[in-house]
Image (cartoon, rainbow, N blue to C red):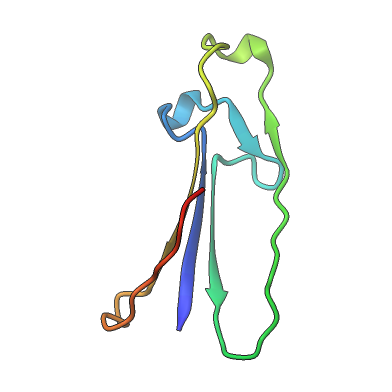
Length: 86
């Protein structure tokens, strides 16, 4: 089955006021479908993000929260994802 991966940068802020954007596309989120098949090597994705100019936002002290989500497609209800978060 395929996995749907999603990355959210500065997710605690509303979209228009997010302080961190991805270099490619200048968006605060990234979505990608990961193909999972037995015997295939791991796939790595490198994403470059940047901090907007300090003059463009007011909140300079709160941390930048990131989130990564991996979900199964809806047509695979019998599968379960298991993992630990460090």
